[in-house]
Length: 446
Ligand SMILES: *Cc1c(COP(=O)(O)O)cnc(C)c1O
Image (cartoon, rainbow, N blue to C red; front, side):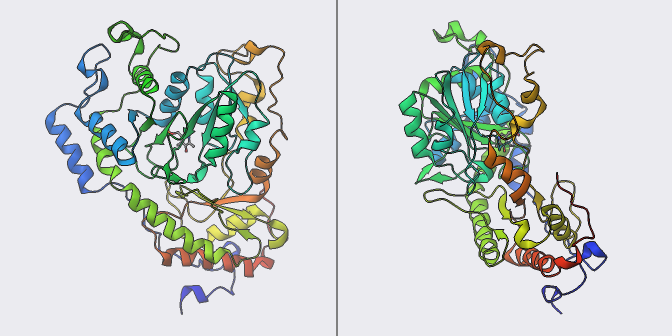
């Protein structure tokens, strides 16, 4: 009998058999070409080509430059600047656009913490705008309600890999003379109305950490079409303070640099990985379509919605869960589905995960307003202004996080439609036998 026919039976979480025992295929991101590229760099002996002082090597070695040129030309960006993580990339972007201590930057609360922390590193103050309940991205409308005379920039995050609705955001930014940074960590190669995300705003970029679509172990890539911003990024990446005189730079703001340099080994891997982006995206989009079609017929589950003009990279696949319609809690549902699937490894979660990160403003750093030092800097700069990070300040993101949203990381290579069919069968098995769970498990909640 096909395992998928075996769904009117005892749930695995109640002691029945798992619907599938065979492990899901592991994500294997490095191939022979990456291996050879690393060996070539090892043989060359030049593991980094950077010097932190004036001279031809302040922009890095041959592989770093090749990786940057290849990224820029692949997507038609004027500049690509590699960095050793996307967190440092975001910090670099915030510094490059000239954020001053006390400037407000509007950002999504539903993102990896670094989207907002990068603002604080320059003394900027994160102001959180609520998200759209269908795309989970911030919108021109939610951003506009947060603009004050101190607002200097907007940090747009293309969360889960779906491009945010950039045209209205750019129009709003223009009207209020705001800079726009795009956090495209989760969506390399994605387009918005035919234009690649990353440099639709002033500056943006992508993460190259191990979990992202493509990676160099750790790393990131900034992109911009603005010459001045590109130079400021290159300087911040590599000890800006040592280059001011040699480069004849006049604007000293934020021109204290750091060392955010990528190694030649990582850049060599990145050159190969870049060739894989479009294949990964196509694979994930195909699986997502397959999965979404099957979910669409299931009461209580709403598949991911892709807005007009946007593309989705499916870094994660969000689903909305309606506990009232399903008749069991979100926590019980997630646990029961996952129990039907093979044991996950440390790196690869199976099935569903209950909600994404907690809305950022609920973290202690914002609740206590203690970030740089212990005396409340940078919030103290704007003394008298009450930055509202209270529970309830962004009701949609809180509803999504605490009640409605679940996501799956299974829309990924090298899974096939058949693997997804098993996942759907596990979901259906739990829904058809939900009565086994009622009253027998505690609500896991948060
Ligand atoms: C991964 C991620 C980052 C941070 O990137 P790192 O390369 O891990 O430093 C920032 N923002 C978002 C939305 C991310 O997903």
